Image (tube, rainbow, N blue to C red; front, side):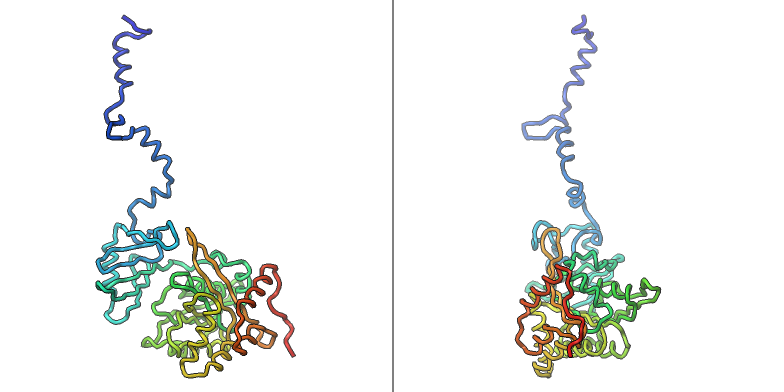
Length: 375
C-alpha cells in the first residue's frame, strides 16, 4: 500500500535518511551537530585558525622570545601592548638547545644563526638560574619609507644623506632603533653611495654588502665588532678606514660617547642609538655621558652643538605595533643660523619648544632653517 504516493520500501528509506546519525545529534551533554560545527568553524577568521596551528620558531610572529630558567618560553601575545603568552613551537626545544649551546662562556651578548635566521641573544643570571632573551633579526633591511615614520621626519631625514654630523635614534629596548638606522644607512647607500663602517656587538641587521645607487655608482657596507670589546677602539679603527658613514651600535661607555661626538665633527655622517624616554633626555644623556670620560661638561655640550644633526625618539605602540616618533633637527649648515646649536652651547635646554616649532614647519612643508649663511 502506498502512502502519499510512496510504497512501504520508499517510506522506510525516507525515515532512515531523515534520522540523524548518532555522530551528528546534539546530546544532553551538549555535543554540537556536524552541520552546526561546520557553520561555527566557518565563522572563525582564517588568521585565528593559522595562529592556533603549531609553527616553526623562525616562522612564528614575534620579535623577542624570553627563555626562563625552567626553560619555559614566552612571546608577545598580540592582544595588548605588553602582554605575553607561552610559546609552543614545533622545534622550540631544538631552538632552546641552540641558544644555550651558542654561549661561549664569556660574552653575555652574542649572535645565533638558527636554520637560516639570525637571533641576538642576551644571557643573564636570574634568581633561579640562567635566562635568555632572543631577538629575532630580520632577513632583509626594510625600506625607510615603509617604517611608518611621520612624513615630516621622513622627508627631513632624506635630506641628510650628503651631510655630516650625528644622527641619534633614541627609545626603549625593542622599539626598532637599530631597524630605523639600518633602513637609513641602506637608503643613503642606495642614493649617495660611499663606504659604511659599522661597529656592533653583536652584529644585528644584514647590512653588509654592495649597493647600487640610482646613478650607477656603488655603496659598500662592512660590519665589524669592537676590537676586544673596546667600543672607542672600534671608532678609531673606523676613522682610519676613511668611511663616509659610521654606525656605532650602542653608546655603552663614556669613552665611546666622546669618540662618537669627535667623529661627528670630523666630516663623517655618524649614527648611533641610546636608551632614553624622549629627545631631551637623549641629548642630555649623551652630553653627560661624554663628560664623564674626563672632558668638561661645557666641552661636551660644545661637541654636541657642533656635531648633532638629528635626534629621533621612537616607540612602538598598539596592536599591531605602530611606530610613533618625534624629532629635533639641527641646521646641517654649520655656518647657518641654528637655534638648536645655540641652545646646546648655552646649556639652557628648551628642547620641547624648539621641537614643537619644527613640527609645525614640517607639517606645513616649510624649511626648518634659513639657507642664507649668518654673517
